[in-house]
Image (tube, rainbow, N blue to C red; front, side, top):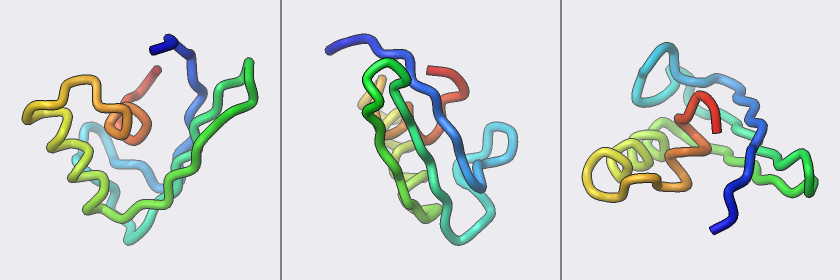
Length: 73
């Protein structure tokens, strides 16, 4: 796997270390500034909880968790 430095913007992100945002839906844009490739996640709180559970209960370094929850990556 290639180690990329992504820039991520979030609309309605969790507050502090919350498991999910307080809004009913959120948008996360993660972009590789070198290649211009990126991904957009439209997600509800249950997707944030799913990513959190994967990361913390058996799937360390889960890409979905990284995009949704990681502060810097």
